[in-house]
Length: 246
Image (cartoon, rainbow, N blue to C red):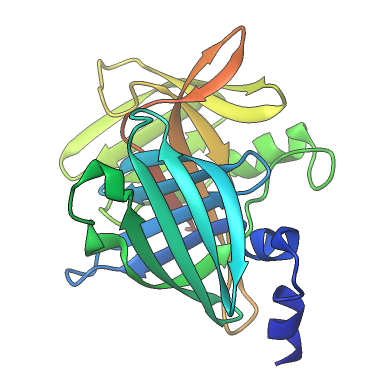
């Protein structure tokens, strides 16, 4: 109860910090749906079926046992959603999404439900790990990153290989930073079309009941220019690291 009370200390900043990171729920078919809260950049992302919807996080209003978030879609600015979030446990929230009544469309209830937290996003800044440590962790020889749909991704030095069902691809990749935000660019040597964009990288972590830590790799499509990094419509990926040496 004390820990829950600390989350609800009456300040928006504390509750937003609690939300920060990746959350998930399972659909009736067993497929994961993800919510990614980024209060620092005032951004909220919905991920399912390897596609993403990105929303600008306009405002937050506390309520009893929860918070209301007002958002607008980055691609369709007239599409607005209000996220009604209830705190139910230290790692669990209940979500209800309401569409803007002015849109005169029915609300999409597929996102409503209970979500568990995977972890707070770990970014390769000076506060946690150096750029060299980040690159070394990504390239750890023998490790494979696995997505819920069975896509396998691995890195060796400046090369990558990926397989999805019966399709395989490999090529070169480059790690870059835009405004100190990490991103990755792929260049297929076999004409593959799986990774067609640049992708923003984040590393949430999930701690199991046995105190083991699962590393998660999120790749979100972005456009990189001299003005920085901008989220775009495209396929997103969520991978979990598998250590084949263990």
